[in-house]
Image 1 (cartoon, rainbow, N blue to C red):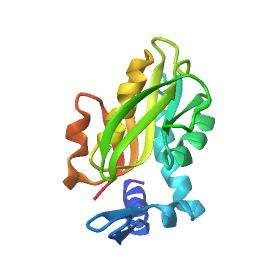
Image 2 (cartoon, rainbow, N blue to C red):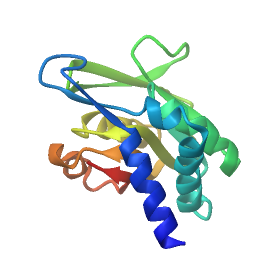
Image 3 (tube, rainbow, N blue to C red):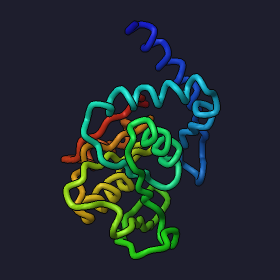
Amino acid sequence: MTFVLSSSIERLKEKIRTIPDFPRPGVMFKDITPAIGEGQFFRLILTIFIARYQKKKIDKIAAIDARGFIFAGALAHALGVGIIPIRKKGKLPYKTYELHYKSEYGEEVLTIHQDAISKGENILIVDDVLATGNTARTAALLVEKCGGNLMELGFLAELSNLKGRERLFPFPCYSILQF
């Protein structure tokens, strides 16, 4: 069974392509669309996430705009929990908290509805790729600002050379794939 899973994960990793100089020169963008575009690989990703989180007491899943939404909805459904969108400024209609941060692409702002999390709720954050960690760290700080207890940040892939995991300390994080 371990060999089959290991083999499947290697095939999944091969499905993620690198696009040089996107969205700007010098960036090596990890494109997950071939992996999520095939049912067997999308199912594998969700199966791994579900196995990891199904026995943990998670109250809600926070999804980082926009590719985090791809996994969060399906995972929230499987776990029977709610979903919280963490979005770029101007995309949420109600009262929000916002935090400014520097991303790989420039100055950004993330927001969350002020009433999205009840004090003490256990929150899992999901996104597609952990790169520098700045976006994920900002999302984690927003969860804390709302009074949530951040259980973990879960990613499909991690770009280890960018040391995003170090920037997330002391927040726990998990990634299915490492590049």
